[in-house]
Image 1: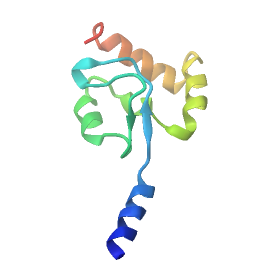
Image 2 (image 1 turned 90 degrees about the vertical axis):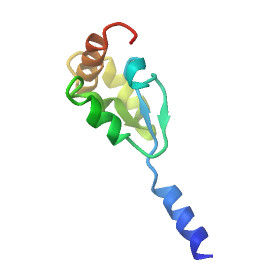
Image 3 (image 1 turned 60 degrees about the horizontal axis):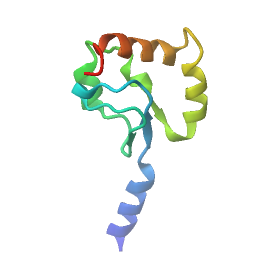
Image 4 (image 1 turned 135 degrees about the vertical axis):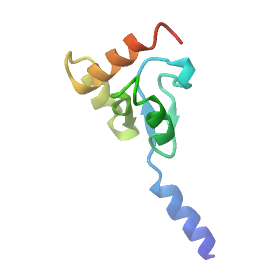
Length: 93
């Protein structure tokens, strides 16, 4: 019984985030992909040198509308992160 309670608690602790950046196939990043356990830290760490703003493109599901609006604001953090990823990805790699 305690195991089921722990499993239920663990499930509710998960943070769902969506990647809102451009497709970067070499990093297996696809626009709109949802990550159940939050931002994949290993991915962000491995890409940090090429994409220092990449972590900003992983947005909690409950903030998608706000984030999509921010993507349209030139100079916002999300716009800068998106543009950085778009320029550095070298096409659709």
